[in-house]
Image (cartoon, rainbow, N blue to C red; front, side, top):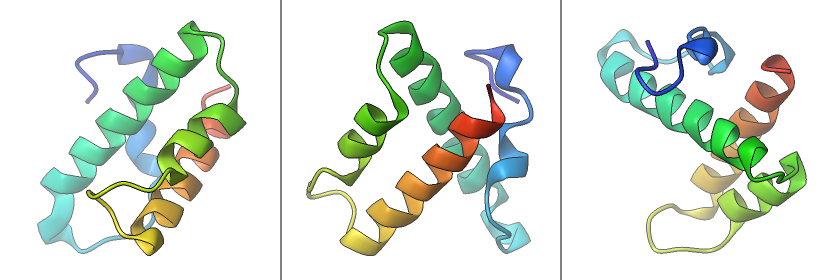
Length: 81
């Protein structure tokens, strides 16, 4: 599933249930989350560092979406230990 890092191939199982029509989007989110986690770990960042980056205010996501994504990142981080 993850062309960038095959070690994280089961990342989709950590995402909340979604409608089947959103499968492509969910696959993209799962890939992005696993690559972000691998990158953060390679740079010596902690989960808290990565979550802070996700929660940082930006023009791309609203607050609720950032909180949802930070939860996905945290749960995935723990599952990929």
